[in-house]
View 1 (cartoon, rainbow, N blue to C red):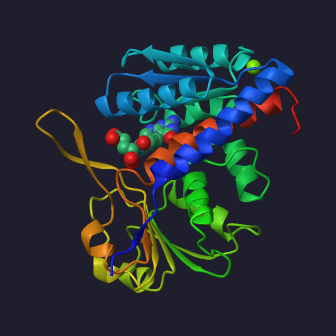
View 2: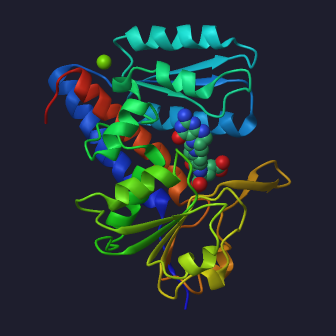
View 3: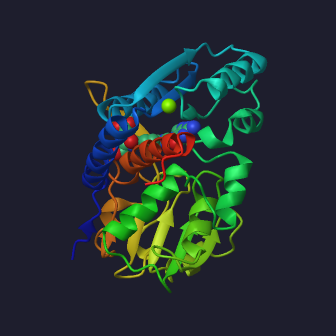
Length: 296
Ligand SMILES: Nc1nc(=O)c2c([nH]1)NC[C@@H]1CN(c3ccc(C(=O)N[C@@H](CCC(=O)O)C(=O)O)cc3)C=[N+]21
Ligand SMILES: [Mg+2]
C-alpha cells in the first residue's frame, strides 16, 4: 500500500494565498509594506538558488524586498556593519543572512548582530530562548513548516510518539522543542536521535511521527519505519544534475521503500522545502505587524 503524499508545494500555495490577502489588507488599512532583505555572501550555486526562491516569494506577495549580494571575501566587520544598517532601516522588517557563511566569518557573531525583532529565521539566542519557554515571537522556518504540514494534513500530534533524527540548531532541536510544548499541533512525546545514539532503529521503529533531518542521503530505510507512521523528510541532498543542468534532489529517507510502509510521507522535492520559504514570508509579515503595532 502506498502512502499518501504530504504535498508541501500545495500547502505552501494555500498559505501564500492567505498571506497575500493579509499583505494587501495591511497595505490598504495601515499604509505599510512588509520589507525583507536577504543577504548572500559568496556565489555558492545552491545558496543562490534558495535566495532567488525567497526573493521571488517575497516579490509575489507584494513585499518590499532587497537582495544584497556580497563577495565571499567580505570581512566579518563589514558584514556586521551591513546588518546594523538594516537593523536601523525602517523599511526593513526582516533580515535573512543566508547560511552557510565563508569560514573566516563567525556565524554565531553574525546571528547575534541581527535585531531580534527582525530575526525572521528565529536563529538569535533571544528568539531561541523565547521558543524554549513557549513564548515565541517567531517560529524557526523549517520547524514551523513541518508543524504546519502536520496540522493541515490532520495528523494527531497530541500524545504521539515523535522521533526526530538530527539535533541541529536549525531543525532537530527546535522541532523537538515545538512538538513537546503544550498546545495545538504539539503535546507530543519526543525522542531526539543523533550520531551517538546507540540503537537508532530501536527508536525510529517506535515513532508514530518520524522527522528526519540527518543530512545524509537516504539514511532512513523502509524497515526502520513503523507501519502506518507519518514520515517527514527534511533532507535536501543534491545527488547530481540532469542533462540540462537541473539539480537532482534526494531526501534523508529512502523514499521508494518508505512510501510502502508509511501512511503519509513528504516527498523531496516538494515537501518541507517550499514550506520553509513560506514560513519565512509569514514571519516577515509578523515582524512588520510587530514593528507597526498592528494587533489584528
Ligand atoms: N539563514 C538561512 N535560513 C534558511 O532557512 C536556510 C539557510 N540560511 N541556508 C540553507 C537552508 C536550506 N533552506 C532551504 C529552503 C528551501 C528549500 C526548497 O525550497 N527546496 C525545494 C527544492 C529547491 C531546489 O530545487 O533546489 C524542495 O524541497 O522542493 C530547500 C532548503 C533554507 N535554509
Ligand atoms: Mg515597514
